[in-house]
Image (tube, rainbow, N blue to C red; front, side, top):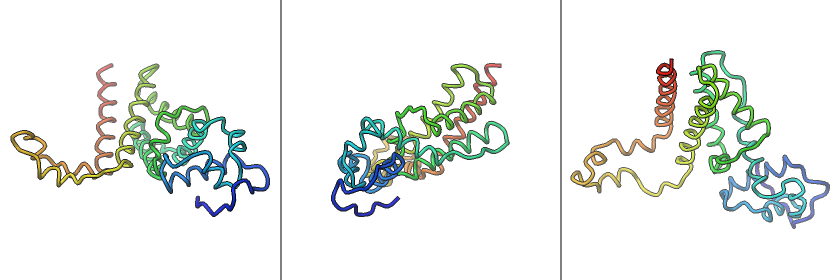
Length: 215
């Protein structure tokens, strides 16, 4: 969503809708980052007053929860009829794409626990895949949190500020002090697509072996 000039604050005619508030909040974050989002700036962009927003969201945390749901909604969709491994890979890929599609997406979604449909649907789909794999009870829940945390962490890293070039860093490393790093493929750490795919394969393999060992 693009943000049009709203003129003076408080000139909006008619009530503001929750969906419009969330869309505008996400657009503001895309422009200036999560730190730039304030209820005052949001109300100005919508041409209304802060009390109108607080009638919809009792505080900024509630708004961020709704923003998280909006991001996760883009990860929903039919899943392949294949086995659990393919379904986990598809879900993880969709989650990553949804988070990357919004500036600071991982920061918005991370730590947000809501009971709205998008969040619950993503969790339910992941849980179904883990139960199909063979996990039950608390282990099924732990398995999906491990997977979800991996996706969040990878996106958080990718969306973070990278102020150094790994090649420059590596060129300064002493082989005596850092023998492994000095001769490593350190620059490949910025190949986010490849490293995400590699890590996801490790997790899926680990799930498979954990289940085999439990039998």
